[in-house]
Image (cartoon, rainbow over all chains, first blue to last red; front, top):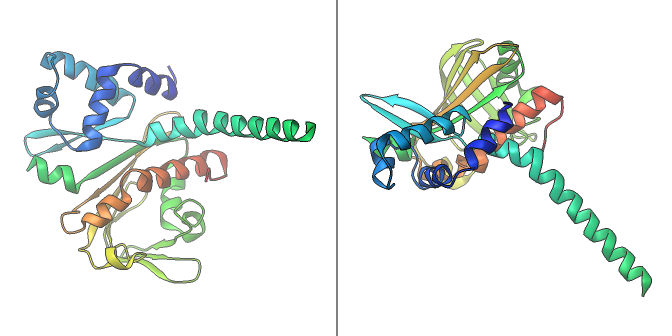
Length: 106
Length: 147
């Protein structure tokens, strides 16, 4: 899988998107904190966090005895630059072309 | 402790297809930083971190704590480009470059010690560092910045 594949896979699951939203609200959380908000076993949450880590959208750091999870938005930004920007630009130009054509007909 | 770290530490990470030396040069020399870092001309010496606008306004002026090319750079951060943020306490930025395989490096940027700089923390989070770092990646990999 390419880097993009990992990110798309990570985002293609509601629980994982929920975890990202929780980290967006407050960054640097422990597994215990993240787990407390989900109706899921600790192992289930760990598994999802590992997929997010493999994709690079979550980065962990040790602080004392705790392992903290941080949201890393860079891979999502790169997906945005590569996939979203490109197509929305085309859409905008298609619309403006349509507008020109319709107005030209009048 | 967790709560403090949560509000005062931000971590950004990206793989870049470039050598550690290239990345080091791109983060320490003004002719590079001007192309991806909001136009900032940043010069880093073993002692000093200096950031200026194209017109020479001082945007950053801090001591360098660690200067270990091409692996690790630690310097202070003061947001002198904004009058309100400029009054806040100094925070800290750490750049770590690890060689991976096949000519790829893992770059990790950690902005911490933001306890006394809440406006800076909000200003650099989200689009701030994310934009700078993804722009740096694009510049080094394609020769052109994205934005």
